[in-house]
Image: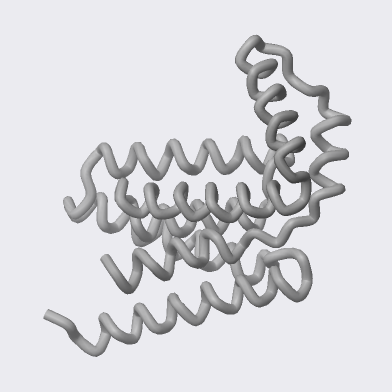
Length: 171
């Protein structure tokens, strides 16, 4: 049954997500004052739902794996900390494989589009060569990773925000 609380919660979460995308677009970062409360509320809600029997071990494992993956992506400078905290918070709110599919699809389209726009098909071939080298355990050093991260400066928060909004309203 659709209640007033249901609508209020969805509208409030939608407004917070949209504010994060706007902050990233304007400032090039998502402030901790926006991501940390969302992460704490999402994590707390996830734990309460698990203790209440609403979530199973598989869903909790999904939240854990996404959390570890996001931490590694931030640690290796693949994404900013605000973006990764947002993904962790959304996964805690929506510990569902469908949300993860929407998120990965959105990120793939957005990042692929940004990369193609910046480098063209030649850059895509170079990226494929790097993946091939990585599969052979030939990783770039930390200086190369840091340099690539600083030179990008992409504002990609709107991708997880879009995934969260799609899941929130069309699930």
